[in-house]
Image 1 (cartoon, rainbow, N blue to C red):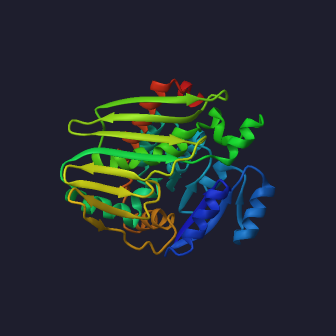
Image 2 (cartoon, one colour):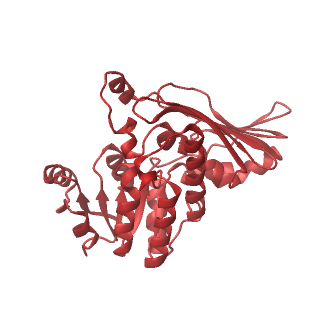
Amino acid sequence: MTRIGIVGTNWITERLLEAASAVENFELAAVYSRTSERAEEFGTKYGITNLFTNLEEMAGSEEIDAVYIATPNSYHAEQAILFLQHGKHVLCEKPLAANAKEVARMIQATKNHNVLLMEAMKSTLLPNFKVIQDHLHKIGPVRRYFASYCQYSSRYDKYKEGIVLNAFNPNFANGSLMDLGVYCLYPLVTLFGEPKEVKATGLILDSGVDGEGSVILKYDDKDAVVMYSKITNSFLPSEIQGEKGSMIIDKIHSAEKVEIHYNDGTIEPLTVEQSHPAMYYEVKEFIDLIKQQKMESTTNSFENSLTTMQVLDKVRKEICLVFPNDLK
């Protein structure tokens, strides 16, 4: 069994634990929270007796083999490196850090201490993303990638009332690009690698984070168009256009339906059944890699995570979005 410690006790953690309950060799062994009250509440709910309010103590504990980090983005690098230095494997929520310099430091730490680091980007590990990869050749030379993830945030209602929650606070390296845009960009990098050029626009809110944005990315033989927002909704599917047809993906962040529309009007359904919750597949990948004594995922690889973060940095530079982490 792989004994997992949880760092961060929010809704995303609870969703991951629901999914992880079906993963073999996953054992929930410890939890960290800033307050003992919250740690005890979480521990009681999940039957955990190893409770921590000090990260150094948790990192040095012999009760865990690995951790899942689900704290605000601005803390990812510092916390992940602490655990990596103590020989613990790390599954870290997306985006992996606040900027590319931090990601580079995290990758160096995992190499120095011979432990696994993986970004918890669920979408690229889903069964239907494998379908996209396996059938992409059918649409001929790819000329355009279009991805949209625009989801009105309930927290924006609070923002308009003058209450700035974490989702719209630059101190936590948050905003629509980091929260939703990354779901459009990570698959792009996984499928096609690093773009040659990045051009972007976006709306910066008074709090200092972006509410929405658009990106155009240039490759030698194709381009990509990406839209994301936390202050509007979109109901458009995503699409990969080739010279022989277009692959339609219902949701780039969760890929539940995939089909090809060929130029002659025929439609080929490609969807495969997803038998588990979306987060199951990232946990299974993480646990399997530990079992196989591998230090890196081939899909959510160091290269893909670093390249995606470099693209995010370029987008932020274009729209003048700066986080406190950038100034450290």
